[in-house]
Image 1 (tube, rainbow, N blue to C red):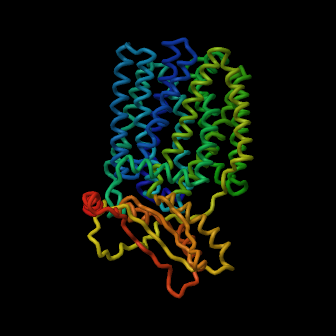
Image 2: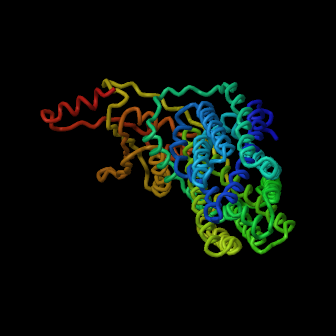
Image 3: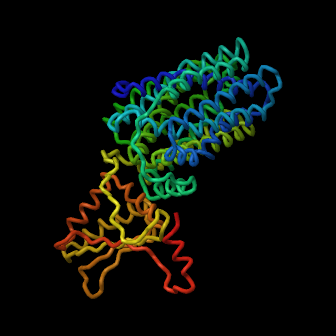
Length: 535
């Protein structure tokens, strides 16, 4: 419970309880309203898809916004937007003019607000607590949602049964108030960034490049997509399980979701102990297999108590698996790009959920809900087997704090921030006995350089002096060169330290920083002037 020692985390956590409670009540109201205004199983399943789809579509842009703008302000905008949509949803439902597609449109808009909010919220956890408290904070956030999941759906079911879906939507609108107030009062003390803000396009490109050059994060994305695709079947089809397989009403649906939430709380409490006993990969495999058991029980049971028991298992495996994915991404990513890395993880996971909601809804419509659940359970077992080829890494204690050693050199030319392209060449003297170790280390240096924005990276060897090696790379502008060096972390510095130890020269490796220029002065005078004078 160490994260609760930090005042802002504690306040946001408790305010989130109210917001999460409202979101779950709204979800129950939307799902059950769809069963009352439509007889189509795929439209019922699309309620889940309409919430997950915006997260898949817009999370990358939201991640770029989270890393380039004040995260507190972004969260405030998202919360106020969702409040406005929830009020409009409640008014429309109360007026009795709701249609299936209008309901899906409102849930889609709320999903858009969630897509904007989530990367900033998850990245802001690192602004609220120190890095060594981050795993506990992520687990507590999962517990926050699932504490409300244990009672929220039952409350939502009771509200829908007693006062209708409009009342559930109104309750959700009220739930945003506490979190908006806490965020408005929060004044985070963040380090000043001397570099200009990246454009959204460049920020997205940098995030994609970072993840593409980070094999551990890529594995999380693949496993998250597989889990979302298969495991969403239970939540997407649970209204049909309550109505058709158990012959119940909205109150029973809320009770089933409550059982799922109780299981999720247990999973949040267990994940720390499991990480001490098992590897990350085995916990993820256990999560896939346990959820397959849960889906199978839901498909075959016609008894509410037995189905609740199965949902306890499903809730526990859901939170254990997803919180482990989230921890891995956060602990594998430096602060400058964590919002974008988390957004890509969410895109993969929620993209799987959106696709899975549609697929299982179509199968349930064509066959039956139990057939769809059994098919998803089989796919979950396949997801566990994926780990044989794409094993999730065991978490290592990487220090991803910025190194902050780079200082801009004195420049004899009048170089502007947008002047370029910049070519950097670094000379090393490497003896023959150190050659293999040097090449292995430079392979890692190449990955780190390219991941952080370097282009056209090459390693050259002098044919007349074989001990002379030259590392070369490009940056499109001077400011991008400075930005590249500001991204070096404490962990990355270990690679540079190994290379310097292998360097045999009497002086440190010599660095040349050059700006490209055209050779035809007459034809290219304007181009050269542009490269040097852009501002």
